[in-house]
Image (cartoon, rainbow, N blue to C red):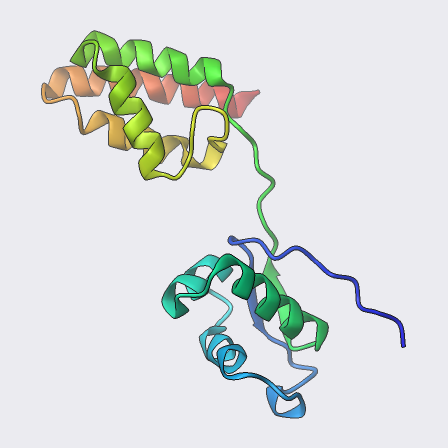
Length: 161
């Protein structure tokens, strides 16, 4: 029998139960059944793993097994990671420094840590969230808007390229 190709399960994938095969046709473990009950075509793998408190290894193993058994249909594939140039983060840090002073680098690093990212692995899709977190640190409403406008202009340039 040919071995099924292993696919890497990623956190932003979304699955639903296959219409071709029923879970009753396969011997499933209790955690696999728990995952099956969460599949609705809307929750991401990461959301299901969080709900069920699954480790990364358990998540990989369970979803791979369900996929190999033909029980899953992919609803949404993972987004291709597009990382932000660290220079953009330096530009944002400089602008933030103009509004909050020398603590800007600490604020930026804390905000990145909150997103479980760092200056080298921030994906494009997290940039608006990062800007919102940083903006909250600027108490003056006029300065906050200036920073947000600067960041928005930079984001728009990024998406044009």
